[in-house]
Image 1 (cartoon, one colour):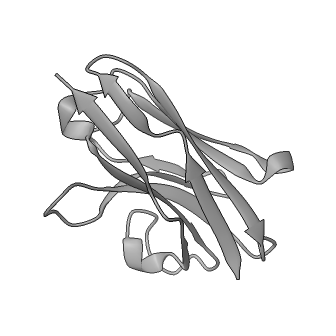
Image 2 (image 1 turned 30 degrees about the vertical axis):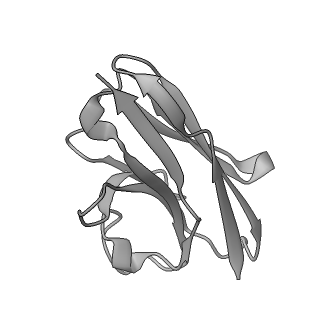
Length: 124
């Protein structure tokens, strides 16, 4: 079992930046991809960004050019740099990791491990 812990959320104004972190521990040796998903109140969990260890990276159209996902393998940590934040980015952001590459990166059902989430609130 792998454990994921997110941090870095907060309240910011439109146009500001935030960097979310996701630290992985435990059974991490079989993780093949990690990603970020967001969930706003009353909405489904949505894909934000992800990458596989084969270096393939994917982003949601709504964040392309504004968000960047990266990884520090030595620290078992994945980051989501969020720039030019908009009020519609307000949501709980979840880090996720998966073992096998059966489903596309943007499909939540393909992930085996989830963090507890971190709140991002963007005021206008």
